[in-house]
Image (tube, rainbow, N blue to C red):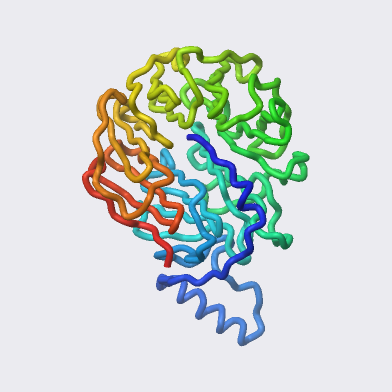
Length: 374
Protein backbone atom coordinates (compact mmCIF):
# COMPACT_ATOMS: atom_id res chain seq x y z
CA UNK A 1 0.00 0.00 0.00
CA UNK A 2 2.93 2.33 0.37
CA UNK A 3 3.87 4.81 -2.33
CA UNK A 4 7.12 5.95 -3.86
CA UNK A 5 8.14 9.25 -5.36
CA UNK A 6 9.18 9.33 -9.01
CA UNK A 7 10.58 12.85 -9.19
CA UNK A 8 13.69 11.50 -10.86
CA UNK A 9 11.59 10.12 -13.73
CA UNK A 10 10.01 13.42 -14.72
CA UNK A 11 12.45 14.36 -17.50
CA UNK A 12 13.36 10.94 -18.81
CA UNK A 13 13.57 10.89 -22.63
CA UNK A 14 10.97 8.96 -24.50
CA UNK A 15 12.08 5.53 -25.67
CA UNK A 16 11.17 3.53 -28.74
CA UNK A 17 8.31 1.10 -28.67
CA UNK A 18 9.52 -2.22 -30.04
CA UNK A 19 7.17 -5.05 -29.10
CA UNK A 20 6.33 -8.62 -29.95
CA UNK A 21 2.60 -8.89 -30.58
CA UNK A 22 0.15 -11.73 -31.07
CA UNK A 23 -2.82 -10.48 -33.03
CA UNK A 24 -6.05 -12.32 -32.41
CA UNK A 25 -8.18 -13.44 -35.34
CA UNK A 26 -11.04 -11.02 -34.63
CA UNK A 27 -8.63 -8.09 -34.80
CA UNK A 28 -7.15 -9.39 -38.06
CA UNK A 29 -10.63 -9.59 -39.57
CA UNK A 30 -11.42 -6.07 -38.38
CA UNK A 31 -8.22 -4.67 -39.88
CA UNK A 32 -8.88 -6.45 -43.17
CA UNK A 33 -12.36 -4.94 -43.30
CA UNK A 34 -10.85 -1.53 -42.58
CA UNK A 35 -8.52 -1.91 -45.56
CA UNK A 36 -11.42 -2.76 -47.85
CA UNK A 37 -13.51 0.16 -46.62
CA UNK A 38 -10.63 2.59 -47.01
CA UNK A 39 -10.17 1.46 -50.61
CA UNK A 40 -13.73 2.53 -51.36
CA UNK A 41 -13.26 5.83 -49.54
CA UNK A 42 -14.90 5.13 -46.20
CA UNK A 43 -13.26 6.59 -43.08
CA UNK A 44 -13.56 6.12 -39.34
CA UNK A 45 -12.34 2.53 -39.14
CA UNK A 46 -10.02 1.61 -36.26
CA UNK A 47 -9.35 -0.90 -33.52
CA UNK A 48 -11.16 -0.53 -30.21
CA UNK A 49 -10.47 2.95 -28.80
CA UNK A 50 -7.76 3.10 -26.18
CA UNK A 51 -6.85 -0.60 -26.43
CA UNK A 52 -3.91 -2.15 -28.25
CA UNK A 53 -3.74 -5.65 -29.67
CA UNK A 54 -2.98 -8.51 -27.31
CA UNK A 55 0.67 -8.57 -26.33
CA UNK A 56 2.88 -11.13 -24.62
CA UNK A 57 5.50 -8.61 -23.53
CA UNK A 58 5.99 -4.95 -22.68
CA UNK A 59 8.24 -2.16 -23.87
CA UNK A 60 11.79 -3.47 -23.63
CA UNK A 61 13.54 -0.10 -23.45
CA UNK A 62 16.07 0.24 -20.64
CA UNK A 63 14.06 3.29 -19.55
CA UNK A 64 11.00 1.20 -18.78
CA UNK A 65 10.37 0.09 -15.21
CA UNK A 66 7.53 -0.89 -12.91
CA UNK A 67 5.64 1.77 -10.96
CA UNK A 68 2.59 -0.04 -9.57
CA UNK A 69 0.43 -3.16 -9.91
CA UNK A 70 -3.15 -3.80 -8.85
CA UNK A 71 -4.99 -7.15 -8.79
CA UNK A 72 -8.66 -6.16 -8.85
CA UNK A 73 -11.10 -7.40 -6.21
CA UNK A 74 -14.46 -8.50 -7.58
CA UNK A 75 -12.93 -9.09 -11.04
CA UNK A 76 -11.52 -12.61 -11.07
CA UNK A 77 -8.16 -12.83 -12.83
CA UNK A 78 -8.05 -9.13 -13.73
CA UNK A 79 -4.95 -7.09 -12.98
CA UNK A 80 -3.41 -3.75 -13.98
CA UNK A 81 0.31 -3.05 -14.22
CA UNK A 82 1.56 0.54 -14.47
CA UNK A 83 4.98 1.05 -16.02
CA UNK A 84 7.01 4.06 -17.07
CA UNK A 85 6.05 3.49 -20.71
CA UNK A 86 2.51 2.13 -20.54
CA UNK A 87 -0.42 0.65 -18.62
CA UNK A 88 -1.14 -3.06 -19.16
CA UNK A 89 -4.20 -5.18 -18.32
CA UNK A 90 -4.90 -8.90 -18.06
CA UNK A 91 -8.18 -10.73 -17.41
CA UNK A 92 -6.69 -14.24 -17.17
CA UNK A 93 -3.95 -13.85 -14.55
CA UNK A 94 -1.27 -12.96 -17.03
CA UNK A 95 -1.82 -15.43 -19.85
CA UNK A 96 -2.55 -12.51 -22.18
CA UNK A 97 -2.07 -8.74 -21.79
CA UNK A 98 -3.26 -5.57 -23.48
CA UNK A 99 -1.78 -2.12 -23.33
CA UNK A 100 -4.79 0.03 -22.42
CA UNK A 101 -3.13 3.43 -21.85
CA UNK A 102 0.12 5.31 -22.35
CA UNK A 103 0.87 4.12 -25.89
CA UNK A 104 0.82 6.19 -29.10
CA UNK A 105 -2.71 7.46 -29.75
CA UNK A 106 -4.01 6.12 -26.44
CA UNK A 107 -5.25 7.94 -23.38
CA UNK A 108 -2.21 9.04 -21.30
CA UNK A 109 -0.04 8.95 -24.44
CA UNK A 110 3.62 9.60 -23.46
CA UNK A 111 2.80 9.96 -19.76
CA UNK A 112 4.24 7.77 -17.01
CA UNK A 113 1.52 6.00 -15.02
CA UNK A 114 2.77 5.70 -11.47
CA UNK A 115 -0.08 4.96 -9.04
CA UNK A 116 -3.29 2.88 -9.20
CA UNK A 117 -6.29 2.61 -6.86
CA UNK A 118 -9.59 0.70 -6.91
CA UNK A 119 -12.86 1.65 -5.23
CA UNK A 120 -13.84 -0.78 -2.43
CA UNK A 121 -17.49 0.05 -3.24
CA UNK A 122 -17.52 -0.30 -7.06
CA UNK A 123 -14.89 -2.78 -8.34
CA UNK A 124 -15.06 -1.26 -11.83
CA UNK A 125 -14.09 2.23 -10.62
CA UNK A 126 -10.31 2.60 -10.95
CA UNK A 127 -7.99 5.60 -10.63
CA UNK A 128 -4.56 6.26 -12.09
CA UNK A 129 -2.04 9.05 -11.62
CA UNK A 130 -0.10 9.97 -14.76
CA UNK A 131 2.74 12.49 -14.87
CA UNK A 132 5.34 13.87 -17.24
CA UNK A 133 8.14 11.59 -18.38
CA UNK A 134 9.61 13.67 -21.20
CA UNK A 135 10.90 17.21 -21.53
CA UNK A 136 8.75 17.61 -24.64
CA UNK A 137 5.07 18.41 -23.98
CA UNK A 138 3.18 15.12 -24.45
CA UNK A 139 -0.07 14.66 -26.40
CA UNK A 140 -1.89 13.78 -23.16
CA UNK A 141 -2.46 15.94 -20.08
CA UNK A 142 -0.77 14.99 -16.79
CA UNK A 143 -3.37 14.41 -14.12
CA UNK A 144 -5.81 12.10 -12.36
CA UNK A 145 -7.45 9.60 -14.71
CA UNK A 146 -10.38 7.33 -14.00
CA UNK A 147 -11.98 4.21 -15.46
CA UNK A 148 -15.55 2.99 -15.03
CA UNK A 149 -14.97 -0.41 -16.64
CA UNK A 150 -12.20 -1.99 -14.54
CA UNK A 151 -9.36 -0.30 -16.41
CA UNK A 152 -10.29 -1.15 -19.98
CA UNK A 153 -10.95 2.48 -21.01
CA UNK A 154 -9.91 5.73 -19.32
CA UNK A 155 -10.69 9.45 -19.23
CA UNK A 156 -9.08 12.49 -17.63
CA UNK A 157 -10.83 13.39 -14.36
CA UNK A 158 -8.67 16.37 -13.34
CA UNK A 159 -5.42 17.80 -14.66
CA UNK A 160 -2.60 18.52 -12.24
CA UNK A 161 -2.77 22.12 -13.48
CA UNK A 162 -6.40 22.39 -12.32
CA UNK A 163 -5.20 21.35 -8.86
CA UNK A 164 -2.43 23.98 -8.98
CA UNK A 165 0.26 21.33 -8.67
CA UNK A 166 2.86 19.64 -10.85
CA UNK A 167 2.30 16.26 -9.22
CA UNK A 168 -0.01 14.22 -7.02
CA UNK A 169 1.94 11.89 -4.76
CA UNK A 170 -0.59 9.18 -4.03
CA UNK A 171 -4.30 8.40 -4.27
CA UNK A 172 -6.71 6.24 -2.25
CA UNK A 173 -10.34 5.37 -3.04
CA UNK A 174 -12.66 5.25 -0.04
CA UNK A 175 -15.52 3.09 1.18
CA UNK A 176 -17.79 6.10 1.67
CA UNK A 177 -19.26 6.07 -1.87
CA UNK A 178 -18.32 4.55 -5.20
CA UNK A 179 -16.87 7.87 -6.40
CA UNK A 180 -15.15 9.17 -3.25
CA UNK A 181 -11.36 9.40 -3.34
CA UNK A 182 -8.44 11.08 -1.54
CA UNK A 183 -5.22 12.43 -3.03
CA UNK A 184 -2.08 14.01 -1.57
CA UNK A 185 -0.38 17.03 -3.21
CA UNK A 186 3.27 17.28 -2.09
CA UNK A 187 3.74 21.03 -2.76
CA UNK A 188 1.02 21.80 -0.20
CA UNK A 189 2.89 19.87 2.53
CA UNK A 190 0.65 19.30 5.60
CA UNK A 191 -2.22 21.00 3.75
CA UNK A 192 -1.91 18.64 0.80
CA UNK A 193 -4.77 16.23 1.52
CA UNK A 194 -7.57 16.66 -1.03
CA UNK A 195 -10.92 14.86 -1.37
CA UNK A 196 -13.28 14.30 -4.29
CA UNK A 197 -16.87 13.02 -4.17
CA UNK A 198 -17.35 12.75 -7.95
CA UNK A 199 -14.61 10.37 -9.11
CA UNK A 200 -11.95 13.07 -9.29
CA UNK A 201 -13.89 15.72 -11.16
CA UNK A 202 -13.84 18.29 -8.35
CA UNK A 203 -11.59 18.48 -5.29
CA UNK A 204 -11.74 20.12 -1.88
CA UNK A 205 -8.85 20.77 0.51
CA UNK A 206 -9.08 18.85 3.79
CA UNK A 207 -8.00 19.88 7.31
CA UNK A 208 -4.25 19.99 7.89
CA UNK A 209 -2.40 16.73 8.41
CA UNK A 210 -0.26 16.18 11.52
CA UNK A 211 2.87 15.71 9.38
CA UNK A 212 4.04 17.06 6.04
CA UNK A 213 6.53 14.40 4.84
CA UNK A 214 3.88 11.87 3.82
CA UNK A 215 4.93 8.44 2.54
CA UNK A 216 1.42 7.08 2.11
CA UNK A 217 -2.30 7.81 2.51
CA UNK A 218 -4.88 5.04 2.79
CA UNK A 219 -8.60 4.92 3.41
CA UNK A 220 -9.74 1.85 5.35
CA UNK A 221 -11.88 -0.28 2.97
CA UNK A 222 -13.79 -1.73 5.93
CA UNK A 223 -14.52 1.58 7.71
CA UNK A 224 -15.50 4.66 5.65
CA UNK A 225 -14.61 7.08 8.49
CA UNK A 226 -11.14 5.61 9.09
CA UNK A 227 -8.17 7.22 7.33
CA UNK A 228 -4.42 6.66 7.82
CA UNK A 229 -1.28 8.52 6.82
CA UNK A 230 2.28 7.42 7.45
CA UNK A 231 5.86 8.52 7.01
CA UNK A 232 9.28 6.88 7.02
CA UNK A 233 10.34 9.67 9.37
CA UNK A 234 7.19 10.58 11.29
CA UNK A 235 5.39 7.29 11.99
CA UNK A 236 1.70 6.37 11.71
CA UNK A 237 -1.32 8.65 12.25
CA UNK A 238 -5.03 7.91 12.00
CA UNK A 239 -8.35 9.70 11.82
CA UNK A 240 -11.70 8.17 12.71
CA UNK A 241 -13.73 11.07 11.28
CA UNK A 242 -12.57 11.25 7.64
CA UNK A 243 -9.61 13.50 8.39
CA UNK A 244 -11.29 16.15 10.53
CA UNK A 245 -8.91 15.36 13.39
CA UNK A 246 -5.83 13.16 13.77
CA UNK A 247 -3.96 11.22 16.42
CA UNK A 248 -0.61 9.48 16.46
CA UNK A 249 -0.66 5.70 16.86
CA UNK A 250 1.74 5.50 19.82
CA UNK A 251 2.09 1.73 19.85
CA UNK A 252 3.62 1.75 16.34
CA UNK A 253 7.17 2.92 16.97
CA UNK A 254 9.54 4.39 14.39
CA UNK A 255 9.13 5.30 10.78
CA UNK A 256 6.57 3.35 8.74
CA UNK A 257 7.45 1.79 5.38
CA UNK A 258 4.47 -0.34 4.40
CA UNK A 259 0.83 -0.95 5.27
CA UNK A 260 -1.63 -3.64 4.20
CA UNK A 261 -5.35 -4.08 4.86
CA UNK A 262 -6.50 -7.64 5.51
CA UNK A 263 -10.22 -7.92 6.06
CA UNK A 264 -10.88 -5.99 9.26
CA UNK A 265 -7.21 -6.00 10.28
CA UNK A 266 -4.33 -3.75 9.28
CA UNK A 267 -0.66 -4.76 9.14
CA UNK A 268 2.08 -2.16 9.47
CA UNK A 269 5.83 -2.50 8.89
CA UNK A 270 7.88 0.02 10.84
CA UNK A 271 11.47 0.47 12.02
CA UNK A 272 10.49 -1.55 15.09
CA UNK A 273 9.02 -4.54 13.27
CA UNK A 274 5.63 -5.84 12.19
CA UNK A 275 2.48 -4.56 13.91
CA UNK A 276 -1.14 -5.65 13.50
CA UNK A 277 -4.39 -4.00 14.54
CA UNK A 278 -7.20 -5.48 16.58
CA UNK A 279 -10.70 -5.99 15.16
CA UNK A 280 -11.46 -2.26 15.37
CA UNK A 281 -8.53 -1.40 13.11
CA UNK A 282 -7.48 1.42 15.44
CA UNK A 283 -5.35 -0.28 18.13
CA UNK A 284 -2.09 -2.01 17.23
CA UNK A 285 0.37 -4.39 18.86
CA UNK A 286 3.78 -5.75 17.87
CA UNK A 287 3.77 -9.29 16.47
CA UNK A 288 7.40 -9.58 15.30
CA UNK A 289 10.18 -7.15 16.15
CA UNK A 290 12.80 -8.86 13.98
CA UNK A 291 11.36 -8.52 10.48
CA UNK A 292 11.99 -5.57 8.17
CA UNK A 293 10.18 -5.67 4.82
CA UNK A 294 10.09 -2.97 2.15
CA UNK A 295 6.58 -4.02 1.10
CA UNK A 296 3.91 -6.28 2.61
CA UNK A 297 0.63 -7.69 1.33
CA UNK A 298 -1.91 -9.70 3.35
CA UNK A 299 -4.99 -11.60 2.23
CA UNK A 300 -8.44 -10.11 2.76
CA UNK A 301 -10.03 -13.58 2.72
CA UNK A 302 -7.51 -15.17 5.13
CA UNK A 303 -6.06 -12.25 7.15
CA UNK A 304 -3.40 -14.33 8.90
CA UNK A 305 -1.66 -15.08 5.59
CA UNK A 306 0.63 -12.61 3.86
CA UNK A 307 3.91 -11.89 2.11
CA UNK A 308 6.84 -9.55 2.68
CA UNK A 309 9.66 -8.39 0.42
CA UNK A 310 13.26 -8.71 1.50
CA UNK A 311 16.05 -7.15 -0.53
CA UNK A 312 16.26 -10.15 -2.85
CA UNK A 313 13.25 -12.37 -2.25
CA UNK A 314 9.84 -13.02 -0.71
CA UNK A 315 8.90 -14.46 2.68
CA UNK A 316 5.48 -15.76 3.71
CA UNK A 317 3.59 -15.91 6.99
CA UNK A 318 0.57 -18.06 7.83
CA UNK A 319 0.15 -17.00 11.46
CA UNK A 320 -0.45 -13.27 11.29
CA UNK A 321 3.17 -12.22 11.02
CA UNK A 322 4.55 -14.10 14.02
CA UNK A 323 6.76 -16.38 11.94
CA UNK A 324 8.03 -16.14 8.35
CA UNK A 325 9.50 -18.59 5.83
CA UNK A 326 11.33 -17.92 2.59
CA UNK A 327 9.45 -18.75 -0.62
CA UNK A 328 11.01 -20.17 -3.78
CA UNK A 329 13.54 -18.21 -5.81
CA UNK A 330 12.33 -15.47 -8.12
CA UNK A 331 13.31 -14.61 -11.68
CA UNK A 332 14.56 -11.14 -10.66
CA UNK A 333 14.96 -8.64 -7.82
CA UNK A 334 11.52 -7.79 -6.40
CA UNK A 335 10.16 -4.27 -5.94
CA UNK A 336 6.42 -4.88 -5.28
CA UNK A 337 4.27 -7.66 -3.83
CA UNK A 338 0.49 -8.17 -4.03
CA UNK A 339 -1.82 -10.96 -2.90
CA UNK A 340 -4.60 -11.88 -5.29
CA UNK A 341 -8.05 -10.93 -3.90
CA UNK A 342 -9.28 -14.46 -4.62
CA UNK A 343 -6.95 -16.20 -2.19
CA UNK A 344 -3.67 -16.09 -0.29
CA UNK A 345 -2.06 -18.87 -2.32
CA UNK A 346 -2.05 -16.61 -5.39
CA UNK A 347 0.52 -13.81 -5.23
CA UNK A 348 2.31 -11.49 -7.64
CA UNK A 349 5.82 -10.08 -7.46
CA UNK A 350 6.86 -7.14 -9.63
CA UNK A 351 10.36 -6.29 -10.88
CA UNK A 352 11.57 -2.85 -11.87
CA UNK A 353 14.81 -3.58 -13.76
CA UNK A 354 14.26 -5.31 -16.07
CA UNK A 355 10.54 -4.73 -15.81
CA UNK A 356 8.49 -7.88 -15.27
CA UNK A 357 6.05 -9.86 -13.16
CA UNK A 358 6.03 -13.31 -11.51
CA UNK A 359 3.03 -15.25 -10.19
CA UNK A 360 2.72 -18.05 -7.65
CA UNK A 361 -0.45 -20.11 -7.34
CA UNK A 362 0.78 -22.37 -4.53
CA UNK A 363 1.72 -19.99 -1.76
CA UNK A 364 5.21 -19.21 -3.04
CA UNK A 365 6.44 -22.78 -3.51
CA UNK A 366 6.95 -21.95 -7.18
CA UNK A 367 7.09 -18.71 -9.17
CA UNK A 368 6.83 -18.24 -12.93
CA UNK A 369 7.08 -15.23 -15.21
CA UNK A 370 3.82 -13.89 -16.69
CA UNK A 371 5.01 -10.51 -17.98
CA UNK A 372 8.43 -9.55 -19.26
CA UNK A 373 10.16 -7.08 -21.52
CA UNK A 374 10.15 -8.25 -25.13
